[in-house]
Length: 174
Image (cartoon, rainbow, N blue to C red; front, side, top):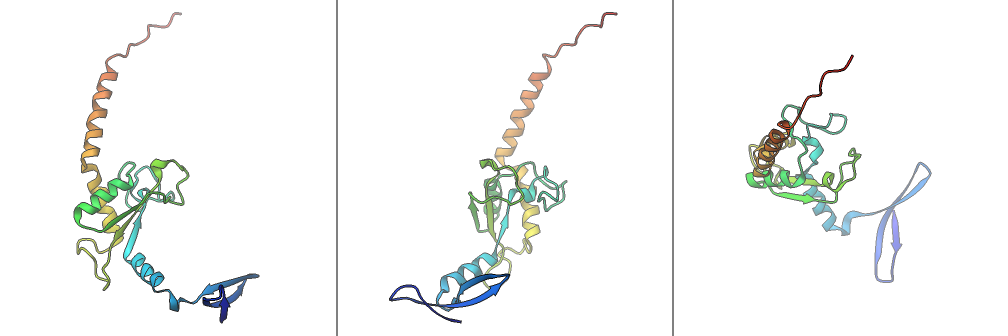
């Protein structure tokens, strides 16, 4: 341990160590109350990526719930709407990406942070004691959203219109 002078008016305490041939300097946390507070906040919030609820993903690709309960291509805003409607504190981080997601398109970006526990460690809502219960609830409720039901209704009509115009070919000549 020692002191390290950055500027004339500031002195930062540091701890140094050598690991694997690299030399690391780390600041001591005594003068950084904001960092410890944000760390405590992050521990109470869980991250939910849309890949966790996607039925088109395998477990190796990141799905975390059973495939029969998963949803087709959920978006971060849908997860946010469902969680906010039930009364959970929700934050969407639009520019975050799931590391296992190979597609870098904008539609696959986003992560949802949900507050699961209060400061004392108790669940915010008793019906959601674990992160899996939040994911299962979101996957169960997303298909009931108005945006999902309207999309389903519109696609059925287009399928029916397309089937009427098909004609078969004639017989083969010998």
